[in-house]
Image (cartoon, rainbow, N blue to C red; front, side):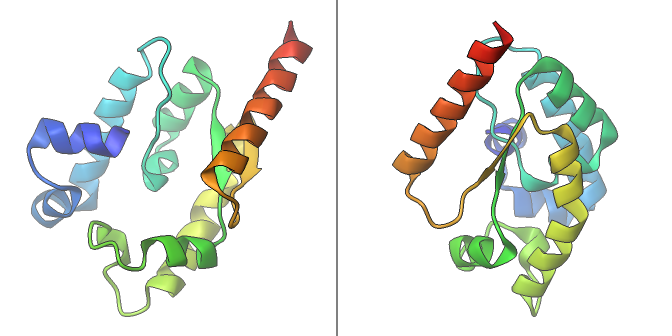
Amino acid sequence: DSDHEIEARCGVKIPVIFEIEGEPGFRAREAQTIAELTRLEGIVLATGGGVVLAEENRRLLAERGTVIYLRATPEHLYERVRQDKNRPLLATADPLARLRELYRERDPLYRAVADLVVDTGRQSVQVLARGLLEQLGARWKASA
């Protein structure tokens, strides 16, 4: 998880990084972390939602791995994260409206870089993982 890696390197939670350095400071740290983590072999890398905002991050992710966009509607995301205090971009009077805004901005970027788009909806992790493995298996068989 790139966000966890950033926290481990800084020794503080992401909201503290945002508070001290602002979003630009966090995004610079994120870009450095993505550049390093995408060089590793045989890993599954989970990224923060804003990673696609930087063109260089999108390029590295696309060139160095298979990108799977786990797409969720703003409403589903809101249900998942509404109690999470570790999300500085949602610390607003109307977090659902902010999620909708972020989705409009980020969804096209994710779609442009993704090898697979998987709608997460309300399905269980097990069902989602099984479907994802089937799609990846079919994709790899087709390319072999």
